[in-house]
Length: 181
Image (cartoon, rainbow, N blue to C red; front, side):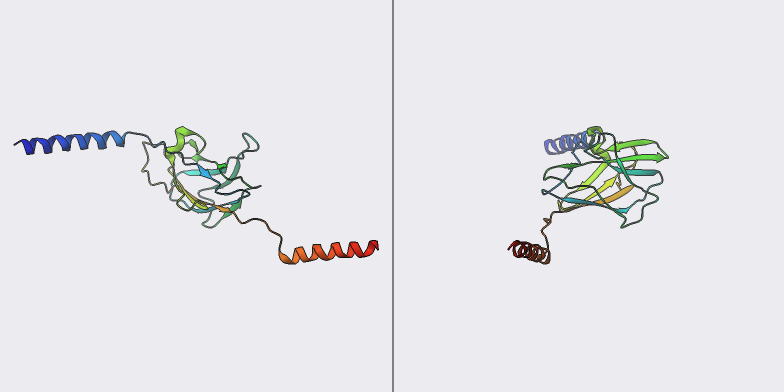
């Protein structure tokens, strides 16, 4: 009898805990962070399975309010890519905005803490980050994060001149030295 009662109490506690966790908003920072200094960043469209039309933009950190529109989810094709201007320092955030422009009008940003639950970020490989977006504000929607999907690739290889370029530079220096004599 005591064993059955204890089992029922445990089941009730577990059920209450799972119900409580279901109502908690996702607040994990979906930050997309440069893994190296001098990184060049390419954004590559994966796809969309959304009814609403949404527009993906990059938040330009150098000019407040001047987001650069990359694509809409219905105009982009898998493999479309955009190289972000400039280079990024190690630890620098790369933020995006997703605006629903047709359907349930709304806007989400990785820079806005109240929107973090709209993004699913897989940074298992920090040089190849995959981002999925849920286009209906949570807790609504289906939480499939396939309404817009893109990949952020960080190229961390240093820009070292090719050996041939160095040889030409050296030959030019020798010619300049000869000319002066």
